[in-house]
Length: 330
Image 1 (cartoon, helix red, strand yellow):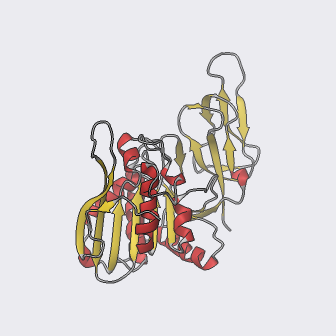
Image 2: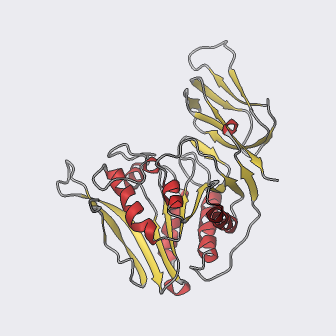
Image 3: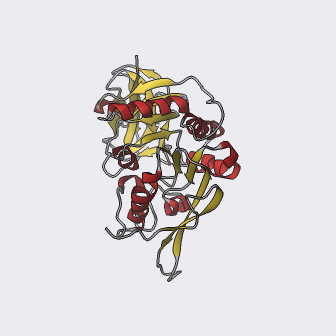
């Protein structure tokens, strides 16, 4: 296979803290010999496990960049026994544009793995993580939120895995993260996800959904900061005590958890996040945006559970994910 064109300006094997870049050559109209410069920090102290911490897999999700930039600024290698690799903006072009996908190639980073060394800019970044960084890693945490179009209860999440020993290790990391909610997440479309690539390599993987609306809050940023520190301590990489918080365990048993819009129009949410809902409850209405005197279309809960995610903008289109319901684990 062809070598990946990305070069790192940091030495992943050197002790101490280094701040640098993953440099990807990118020839464009305004810079013939230009590069995409993806910020990276590596902190290392002797031998031990490695954690790979990432944010902005989608460029309009901000808790990850906020928490990881602060961690990179404050990390003390004397408190480490191992290595921490910090990439606050995995899809750096999308992060700088404030968009979900890359403005260069429209690449959705979280649908581009394992990537290609001779592919698009997004595929080249994915290939570098697949072949260079993840093999160095013992535990990976990828911080997500809802971006501009969704809003979530703040949860950390893992997947149901065929390898139950690995799933149990992921569950242990999930418990350490101590988000207000902990989820066994059902994906709509898992093809090309960073999550799956890491899990298929036998690594502990943890993700989150910590809010949404295209911004972050003091509360959601604090959850990310505390959770990342907790996972580093839990993994034996950082000295300290895990700061445990109560967490409600949730599961998504089947596709009835999701409701997708079948209409365009004005979106009216009828229950707030965290509400206990019963099958048949009216959770949302869609009003026609172009005429008066017409009844709205009502969308009802397909199951009992907890309203966990909702469409965020005031207007909605056919096909948009409107609502997500999860159930409390007993």
